[in-house]
Image (cartoon, rainbow, N blue to C red):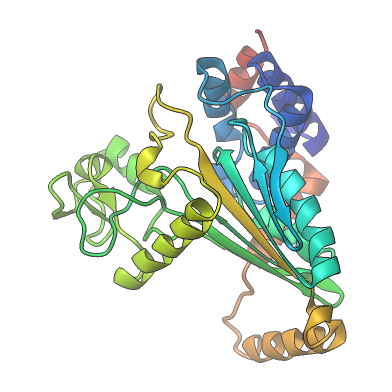
Length: 333
């Protein structure tokens, strides 16, 4: 069935509140999941509703948590998410990053004791729509080894960045640092298909094309050692600076029971006016984009998601019957 985005948000909000989330946590989480689904990022969309509801019901997330600032100095601030779902803390982080960047030229906001944070391109895009350059980082439960290692220690550790443009949507780059999304390996395992070499290691640290063996082993970073080092940088930014748990200290999101993950996120916001100036920055961005688009095959990062979001906003969002029934079932406390 097809629903407007507003109705879809209402359905998800009701399901999350029935599962134990407070009103603000439920509504902010619903808005993020629906926005991701609308942009075609289904892995961070409505398929997560049942998972989040389970976290709330089994105590892996505190539905009544309220994020709070625990330390601050000028352009730097630390937010404790209180073991709740990440989205209220991310909203507070956006707010703090925006005004501090305007006041100081740059702002770094760290979040600790947090949870799964979905599509990280969403918060940086909103900051870019306010004229700020923004970067976002998060760690995840362990899925990848460090360079030379065999066992999972680091998460897939997504990175997102957004750059404001003149009279055009921001340029948004959003990617995890694994060679492939874990979801693709899960689908291959379910269907009994092999996976390409270079995607994963088995439990003994050997390269494997067996999807089931990969799920009990480790995923590999994109670009080999260089990608793994980027993931290590994200792990340190999000955890060492904030006091959050490292990936190997957080239980997998894909198991029914587990600990409260205590993940970390970080937002970095920069006011172009503090450097070359807003006009100079905008001119430089367009110079590069125009050069990129000279080649007919170039598609700007985020352009496909923007187009999909526009279509879904006009036509509504399609909810498969199985997903709709699950959300409705979760609406009963």
